[in-house]
Every structure is written in structure tokens, then in C-alpha cells.
Image (cartoon, rainbow, N blue to C red; front, side, top):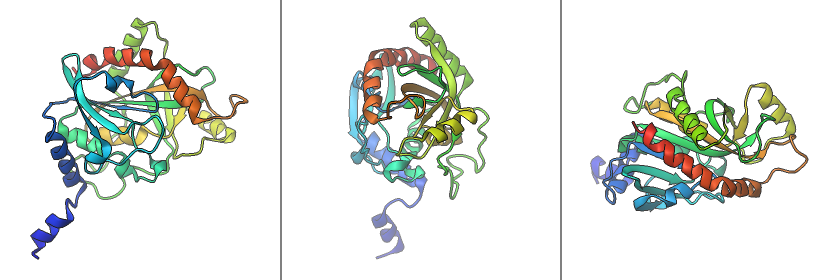
Length: 286
């Protein structure tokens, strides 16, 4: 067997080539030209159910996509139309705490870039660190703290994706933040603006850790989003992040923190959250 035949048998060897392989799999079933992609967090996947002319890809059908194992993450990529605009929406994500590397966690973002996506909308369910935030509130992410202990950019850099040392002065587009706040205000929603801290999980934080995180300046805490935002900016995408405050973090209430509360809050704000996205998406694509 020649070296060329052996390489073909082993499959793509670089991250870029693996992303190209995933794009080919998607293009085999959908030729839609998408410029906006969404990642819908815990309990927030309902928006994708409303897309028209939809093509649905369970994650295991896309080379390189990991299977989500968490309740509230359907594990499907939906490509369809919101009104007249085609877009891609992930119903759920995979997480570092599930055993995936950050390169695997952020692989879909690499694929989106090669599909032509220019704007990434990240959503999540988050715990309130700021004592003024209550479950059901929405927060637009102004900046983040990466407390996961790792970076999705660690390892060899492929210049086809982006530079070795990307600038993160403005991870979350200020212009897009203003659009989200304006649309929320038009709906009568008090949209908060705050700092999101990402930790590795899967255990919820201790009260002492929450006090530390509050001292560092965070308003909300979760286990996702930040690696995806970093990779998106590495590739020059515009990013907007929206957190649904699903619970009060440890120490802010006498009740224990649990995932069921996260799911219940997502269900409670589903209609409002979906309407907000419906209004925001056409504007962030311009």
C-alpha cells in the first residue's frame, strides 16, 4: 500500500482537513448559504424547531461532531430558514466535562467558518453570581473570564483558521450587544449586561468559589460558551452571547443547585427567548 493510499484510509490528519470533511457531509444534504449560526444551550433549543425548510443532522452523522450526553441538549444541527434568511442552529453542545477536549468542543465552530458563517450567536443557561440577577432574567455577555484551566487554541496553530496570538480585546461585539438590548427593550424585557465566567464542571461551584468569582468581577457562571467564543474570534467571526439566568449560584440561596431547575427555567422563558432571537437574528446578519 502506498503512502497516499494509507493516508486516505486513515482519513483527514489535520483539524482543517477534518473540518472540510464535515462541511462536505453537510453540503451533501444542504446547499444553503448560511452567514449566521446559533448554539442553543440547556433547555433553549426550541428556536431551531421553528425553522422552515429545515434539514436536520443528528451530531453522530457529521464527521467530527461529538454526541451530547446532557439532558436539554438534543444533539442536532438544524439548517433552515428564519423567515427568508437561512441559518444554522445547534440544538445543544458538547462540553469539556463530558470528556471532550476543547478542540472537540469547538470543532463545530471551525466547521461553521468553512460553511461561510460570519456571525455566531451563543446562548447558555447560567447561574447568577450578581445578587441582583434572578432566575428567568436574560443577560447579554459583555466579556468573559476563562476559568476552565485550558484553552481551545492550545497546540499547533493552523494559519488558515487564524493567527497564533489572536486579540481578544472585544470578544463579544459591542454593536451586536446594543442590538440585543434594543430588541429586548422593545419587548419589555429588562436585559442585563454582564461578565460570564466559565468553569470546567461538572460539579456546581461551592459557595467559596462563587464568592471568589464575584470578587473577580463576574455576574454569571456556567460551563460552556467561552471556548466557542475564543475560537470564533480566532477566525474573525463576530460573536454575541446571551445567558438565561436559570438559578442562583451556590451560597445565594439555601436551596441546593440542580439541573432540573435549569431545565424548568428554560421551559418558562422559552417563548420569550425564542421571540427575542427571532427579532435579533435578521439584524445581526447585516
